[in-house]
Image (cartoon, rainbow, N blue to C red; front, side):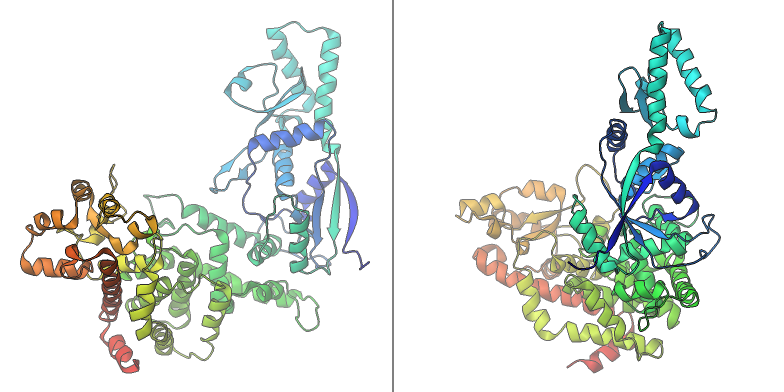
Length: 598
């Protein structure tokens, strides 16, 4: 048998709570904010009260020896010796209830957990309004440990209120008093912890976690770095969580992180900071660097750790700068992507923000020029789904390509060269039409087509209102301003013997149309409805509309399969023209692009 990687340690609940309070045991957000329901917390206390086992805790010695201090001015200055790998939700529940403190929910809102107890039948329940009015219940068991008055006085007050409702004999009062004491004594409940050795690396810790965790949750490298921040720079982790919370809450006063594109999680923001500060996308080495570990000797150094955290701190300040954040989204607007539901890859968005900050902070590129190059870059990465497979590896290579870049002009040329080398002639003429041969409602090529319509100033089909205005996120009604219309209506195709959804719902059969027209067309054949709608427009307007909406001449009379094939080619051309419109935003960029074309 190999050497055992852990030792078994016994704790009382009270000792665990004490060690968390003084910082001996870190209670990091290893598995994101608190996700247990209050009912699950109730069941935990019920199991403990009945003497049932409630599972092992898994702790990890972090490899830091001696008296180390945190970065910043956080109250908990002592660096935790042990980190909680498994059992974080249980200990958060217990700590919150025994200390009567708030927890942070998944939406980053704070709330208290109120667990009630009825001594008569020894029942735990989540407190509600009716329980709070019923004198038979202790509505908040936290009062037994951290109430404003002593436990004895609190219990006397409970009996006084109970006696106002019913008579209680001395023997019954003694019985109930003893039961309440049993609840109070839950602080002595025994826990067994498996303490992993400090020599165990984070990959092995993650593997152990998965093997013993019944929920099958996996830990990733960002979890470990957020944990490390909890230990050495808790303020930084809290700042990430605060920014993530603010991005979800509209604010009418002052600068805000809120926007209609993306509400990031802390690990999204962390990845941007790491890319900006360390030019890394793979987080494994960054984790070890932040620990202050010498990768050759394996030794830890306070000086090395502090210097690396200083880099992260500076980078994170740029990432969480609200002005930077909001200015970046102007690049997305410039790329034609005007709504969050047009963005199929949030990873691509996060990485684009990283490049935006590198260009702004490290190369001093002026906002107008930077916005244009990031718009082109994002359009390419979104269209090609650049970061959909092995995103860390692809981004790592993209960041490595910056090693020899010396100035802003070289930065712009590098990004544009990558875009040009990716969007080859074959990509425009072969790959995109092939990608459009699908029924997928959220395909990158389809969203790029919509973005191109925005860039080209296109109006909706049979409409004189621009697509960009009709899809604006601010327009909300019972019906969406624009709907996806079957050019060859589904019911019509079924009458023609084309019944499979993989055929009727091809995205080349869809066009963006105002909802009133969509309803009016219903299941009419194209030859039946088209003439009526073309009467709205002049010949030149019809020609323009046919171009925008990739409609082949005489399409209404074409065989359906031929129509789909021809329309895909035309949609690909519209996407290309939309991208070319981005080049027109900057004459020098267009000249450079054309010069470099093969």
